[in-house]
Image (tube, rainbow over all chains, first blue to last red; front, side):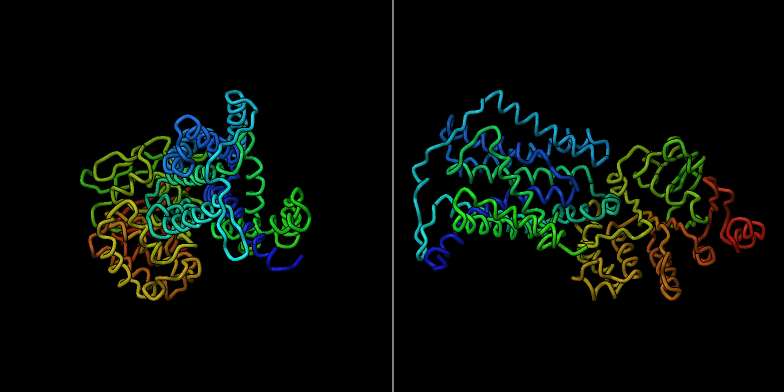
Length: 290
Length: 237
């Protein structure tokens, strides 16, 4: 039961799954950290991205990994436009309004998808979906390994943007000191929209990474966002590195509790841990103590 | 004044139905140091926020270099070289000292960022030692230096300093007012909004006394310094 032959593959698989969770949480925490709102439309936007990737394959025959190249900038623009022209103006500068607007957006998006595509669950068949790579004693599914590598690359790219570009510095500046940023000539509405766009772009990438092994229906995104919320709290609200570490951690917890409690109970481990963290370290495992 | 760098006429501004500024006229000439004095709650910060476009005036005009800027966004006003260093410093606590400075040239003077940074760091050697440090860990005085340095990164034509001496030790206040003269010697006009009357009147050429949303007096610094009624009534001296 505790033999490394079982344990190591479970941990590796957990890391692979956790990477996609981390990416979804990354988008959520980025938006929270800068706009200080919980984006309730995150799940619906993930679902929309999954449908986009599905139909890119279904109608145009584009492989999901290739579709990511086009869908990522497209969803960046979608997120940018949503924040700049829908959420921002509708909020009239009040945070609780933003909350309601994103919730409304989620309801509208989900039901529009339901209306157009019905409740059917769809999957795509790819020749490589069941290929595996052997690492030591572990057999890892190729799509998961790809997902892991892509997420690490995206997180690195995001880190470089935040650290070295003026836009990235402006995002970090606006997060903590909106007024000071305005007086530096930083257009706060634009930076909010860029941040929302980046968060939404993360979803497009996540959707393309999920689709080779996962299904899509009008509520498919919600399961992931529930976990992503957990990760954001674990990692510390607004912490990008916390989201990455938290995502990987949650993936491993899910995998191990799946191993010891049975596959269908895997997610219990996540939520037990979530409650424990809320009780004993409410600022998150990696968050700053306040 | 036709040749003013900043000319404000009949400015009214407030929050909701409460009017904070009730018809303010003010002018700053090129290269001039002008002080706006008054105690807390007289509308000094509101005046600054309105000039830099963060708040909108209900009536009145604001002209910078002859152009009406009253309807412009803060970023456009920064682009013109009207830079506001706010009360309370408002530096970016999670960013390094160097990143804070770099964002000063986000909108203006970007191509000369490196040379301007060297210049600012030579004015503030203590910031040079702490370039990589998180700005939030600086002392109050250092944060004020950083806020002014960040303003200088944009090559301001007019620099508004809102309560720069607030919370500084007497020694640092002394240093600050020397610095104000240094900045002005480079040809930068300054609008100095202060509660520190004595020292402000020493560096300023002209001053305005703000009380309850109105300028109750304006004149040369020496006139105001020597007006006994005024001292008693508005400046608590």
